Amino acid sequence: MPVPSAAKPQRLLRFRPLHGVLLLAALVAPLVLTSLAGGSKAFEHVAQFPIGLLVLMIAMAALCWNLNAARLRLMLNGRAGQLGQRGALGIELAAKCALCATPGGSGGPATLLLLLAQRGFSPSKGTAVFLIDQGCDLLFFLLMLSGLVAMSVFGDAQWPHQGLVQLSLLGLALLAVGVSLMMGYLPKLLRTQRQWLAWIRPSRRRWLVRRLLRCRHALRMTLALPKATLAAMLALTTLHWLLRYSLLYLAVIGIGGHADWLWTFLTQMLAMAASQFSFLPGGAGAAEVGVGSLLLPLMGREQAAAAVLVWRLISYHLYLAAGAPLLLFYSARMLRQR
Image 1: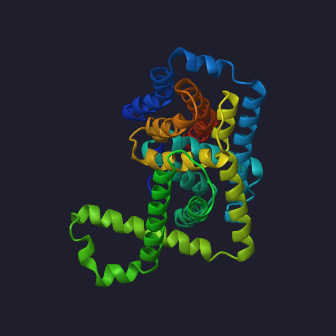
Image 2 (image 1 turned 90 degrees about the horizontal axis):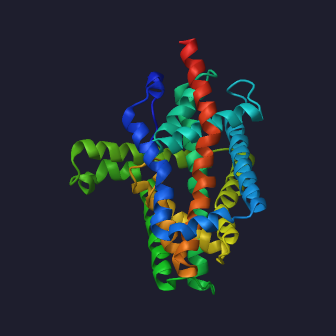
């Protein structure tokens, strides 16, 4: 969970050639992988995708942007001046574009902090807003993971690779429980049990400790919110992710495939977690391969490749296309002010 410093905002205005190369690779990666996996038939499926369903997916993506903008307004609670839905939507799109355009999403939180600072919101308070935002997402996925584990173990869900999925979910659940316990007792562990990190070199150890403490701080700040505010934010978070993770299900339907909605949701959770290990912006490459491989047991290779391509066009490329003009506008305005 990278939390940037807003002390040097000029860093956000620099363009490095390497970033451009990586972004270009991320943009063409879905097309290359689709061509390799499905060939010309995959692109035929994409060309025959129902226009009405495509418009619905775009509308759902736009609704997700507005839900996040409403959540941002709720978190700021009037502390960043008169921020209407349009202004919050502009900040949301610009920050998400920066997140999608940088490796590891490092540009997203930094851009958010800088845009909030332009409205007189101090970097420390902006960092707190970012941490609460991450805490809400983390709470949602912990709850969803718990439900998926219960359904796979005690329910009658019939998923591809049932045994492997159950083991994966149980492993993730145990990991989540272990991390939760560690977060609760983290300060005590760091004071009394220093040897458990002794095998990591000092510089890497400090990096890890900082991020663990920030993650713990995010959860504490989120849970300390007034109950009504926390409930409203969690409701917006839940609706956002349910809509966002329904895009793959609609993409599968549009290319003539058949898959359970819950399976596509689980597919995206696992694949997007794996995409964190990709060095390309937006987790390009890892996300497509992960989702495509989990869809293959349910449909042909050409259909899976086509569904993944449509899904990435809406869930990734559309974010870049919608946010890029706003990011350029805000950057140009800040340069003029400087």
